[in-house]
Image (tube, rainbow, N blue to C red; front, side, top):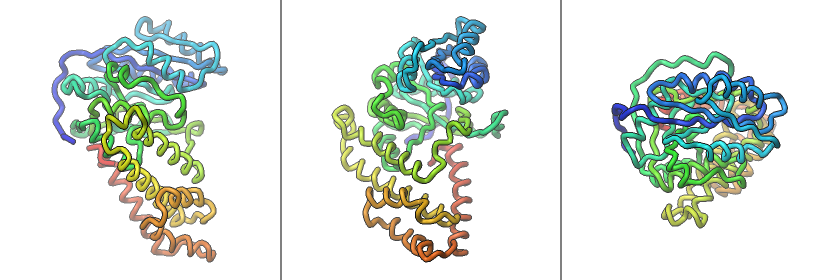
Length: 355
């Protein structure tokens, strides 16, 4: 990975923002406004409404009429699912750069200019991402401007780093692609409806370099009741399984020839996800959860990495809970330390992309 200083823009780039929408029409005006207000780029918006029953298609059509020709709309007559909705919008793109942003998210000021300026300077970079700041209610959070830097990886090095971490490092609305890289990568995989974005980034990185804009948000990711899908421990375990399925594409016939050593890499991925499951279970036990509540996480960790050191470290907590004991003072102190470490990691992630 190289850490470099930003360079000047070669000129205003053309970017299409594809907005898939299902029952999120009430969020569309804010997102479209955030795109049309972007500096140093020429923006176009394609809204793809997937036959929303709540009238979102009417909102999309009105925005297209009011902002023509910069905004256009594709309205599905029948619901086709989110993967097909993504692919329909991406297929209609004819600009040099493209990004896919969910209707309930917001593009950060200046984000598209920063991403395209980076790709102008590094022609081998096909995918750029950055910090996606989470918010719950309007207005979007204010951020203190930090020095902007760029992290640039060889694509296969980024795959190795990402797979070894066992995490999806890209939330999604902050990702901008070179359209030529999108065409070479292909569309989203309908067989992976729950982890298709991660698999998509891996396919892109197998062919192109990857970079990150550091120092300020590239997007605002809205968290609300309809998308808080990771609220139960069993669901978290399911999410981790989907994540592993996405990583396993590295050993398939398409990517294995492009990613040498992918079999060994997946072994590290399984160990990393097992470690995460054990750590999450330990943290919840330290907060007062009971063994039965985190059993799915413990079972997943044991399945992926039997007898691991992280499993041995959690055995004391499980034993205490099985005897009906509440978290010890030591447990509570450890969790307070972890919480402080989370804050430090969050700052490092925003400044330099260090997960």
